[in-house]
Length: 202
Image 1 (cartoon, rainbow, N blue to C red):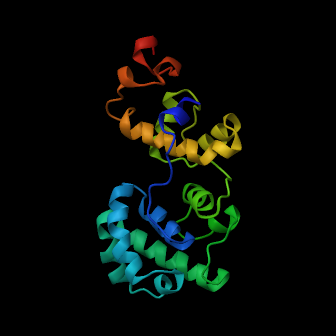
Image 2 (spheres, rainbow, N blue to C red; image 1 turned 90 degrees about the vertical axis):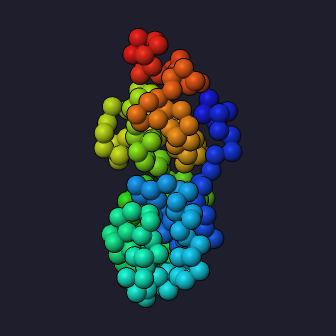
């Protein structure tokens, strides 16, 4: 696979030590860069290292700790509520089942896929963020706009062991080459495969 050759070492770029911390970091990464999240989480996890402490966190303090990630009030509220549910129903541990993860406040399939893959090594789906959504459509891999439908289309095209890291490689490519406002088609190693490449009549 070309993406694998282009980004052989691509992996989750969020910093974490436990599945709970990965869950929180992934929730914070919504509409925010991983780099910014990694600037925020050291102080956050020093103060609230696990689900029990986060479940009992003062909401205003939590909001201030995550403020720079954007949408901080909603994120803080969801993080605390998710951790309260983890404490009440799962002894403070992150469940290993998709159907249980997506019942947590603020957690949909995208976050659940990241947590399962990188927290537990369980590959259950393809993470569809804004980069994956955009590039999958540009590359002609899907015509869908709904992330769940896009994920289904990609799961049918890709071998299961590649699902999660393929997403990360596509994200890397979206950041480096195929940017939303100005895709650099002349520098793209996938251009000859891409129906959106103007150089081949797209």
